[in-house]
Length: 290
Image 1: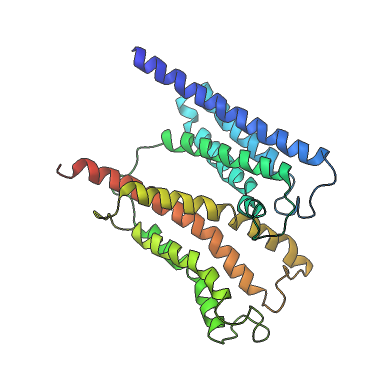
Image 2 (image 1 turned 180 degrees about the horizontal axis):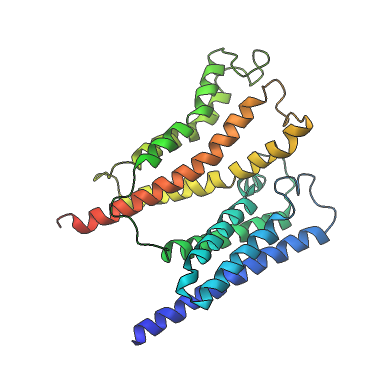
């Protein structure tokens, strides 16, 4: 009885911590609007309404969970998952912000934006813990495995087109060489080739691959790509209807649509594949002979 009480207290404390982080994201967003003379790229990644909307929906889900009514569990789950996905979108652009701390990108870090996105990522992790720790229904005994195959297909558009261009093809280009010369630009394909390999590795249960290694790789890759894909798709939604070229001179408009769309969908498929592998491998560990 005492252990159940302490567990309940710990669960409630986790809810209050997640709510506090949601509030911190709103504070960071407010500070961004109050401070002037920020970097030129600041505020160009996500819509301005996104942080308060993500925080508000997540807080609503947390309040429903604090209420503790069983009949509201589906509403709680929907609110927390929606807040989680929107909070990941708020964190979009964080990998590029971190690269600005290195010589790989032009200097000029927007520290307020970096802080808000970092808080958003931490909040998304807390919300994911809440969402996965309190499922609305029991997990299926045989989780599906096709998510990994879907992720594998979605990882291919970028390396396939890059390989065609490196070999001299012009598919999607308005003129030869518009995407760069030689094989040096092709090196950007390596992360996506690794993503394709990881997608396939998440389909079966490998006895020779440590479970924790695959789970760490799967969730890390999902988080990184999820912090790029939504903002990239948002840039398409906002720029293409106005005739914008997304600064990709010499490349047809359908190419970034294919790339950005596949990145967004890969994050979803890879997350589902990782979760499926997590459930299946846990059952296998329990049932396998010691």
